[in-house]
Image 1: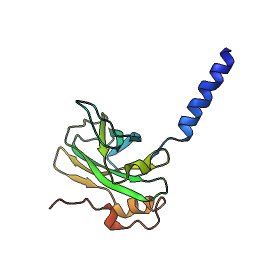
Image 2 (image 1 turned 90 degrees about the vertical axis):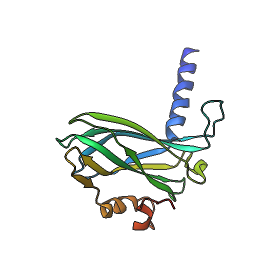
Image 3 (image 1 turned 60 degrees about the vertical axis):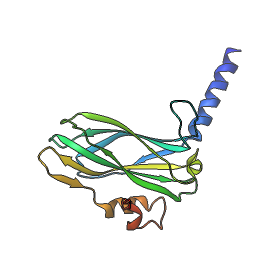
Image 4 (image 1 turned 120 degrees about the horizontal axis):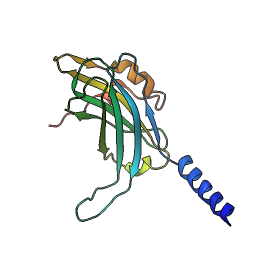
Length: 169
């Protein structure tokens, strides 16, 4: 009986792992921040009295300051692709907080693209360091040509315009 129960638990977890969303960190040489952990997950609509939200994608990021200088603000580029590797959306998660040398920061951003449900089970989330501001005022920016080349591995028709931050009116 115990073996049957153990086998059922293993099969259940293997199914969950096999059907989970995929999370990818883009390689970036020379980035002052290193993304040490990234997890993109679909969250279904939730209606509660104090914490309600529509369908969304949750992006959890842990990053370490490997620059040797204090960082006071940073942007993480977050891109979501649906089940068929079509672009769902891209945005920059902003954090205006000090990250000391060798320290780690943990942040979470949510994204509510049209048809967020299409990310469920088979979607892919991608994270990369987009920009960093140091305490001394210097700013480091990602090479978007390299980022685009990496993202085209998911959707070959992606172009430079797809990576631009959308500005409000």
